[in-house]
Length: 382
Image (cartoon, rainbow, N blue to C red):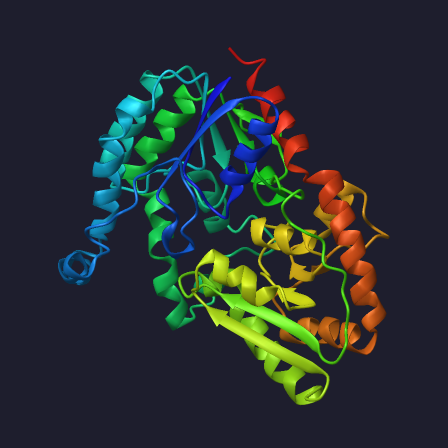
């Protein structure tokens, strides 16, 4: 098959491409790099002018006046001029409802062009979209990434501004068009299953693909201090619950000054992120999830102990009640402190969890296995 993967978050489409290529498919990946993470693409529509020193001046002025990032307009313009290269594919998969990340009206125009010049189109439910945002606003989950907003934390509100774009009338037109014209929608992890399960377009859950052939397992060796890593993206720190981790780390540093080393980074490229956390035994990922996102899965694949979503829904789905593969991080400072303390005082648990984590990734998230699952989902649908 000829397959076009549109958009990128957290390297999901890059890993899926690697699995599909191993299966003998022709795959083209088009994206804008996802900001500072700068993920690879075969065809890029990355903003260049409005992210240059010269272009950034009007960009910042425009944003202060109208709360709109001109780089998004540039994404759309550059994507438009790539459209002639993006046709005659057997399958197109969109990373989410706004894969191009431009103005909603422009997004709709470009998606119509893209869908009309290709065969089948599928949508990933990955991150926030209309369905997920509506579900969170209705407070139908025990907790969600919207909690800091609901709690009225003043400095958190700016991080939620763009999320409300998904429930505007302009984006609802994009959502409605896609759900009328796609062949189906696929959940990338368990956080998206409950909001989608009654939807007639829902095709099921396919776990995030992880290329364990290129991610080496690192046996946990504690020679001196236990190293804890927290990588912060300033643009979504409250959505990840980083404020809970930061408070917990202050307490851990005071309780175990001679037993721990804490590494904290902020908004660095993906390659630098990997370099920094490679030294860590414990990685703090997020607290508002029921399942693991891509960064957590990569860290687990390396044998790290990851504080992330590992709720009972996750344990039941994968049959892991007695086989701890990650630490379920709750939005509660004392809970995080207690879990970290237990690991520091019982370092043998770090070794055991790391081994089980790697085995779990190889069993449930192997990139070729999940690529086959995508093909099996795409193929029966005309």
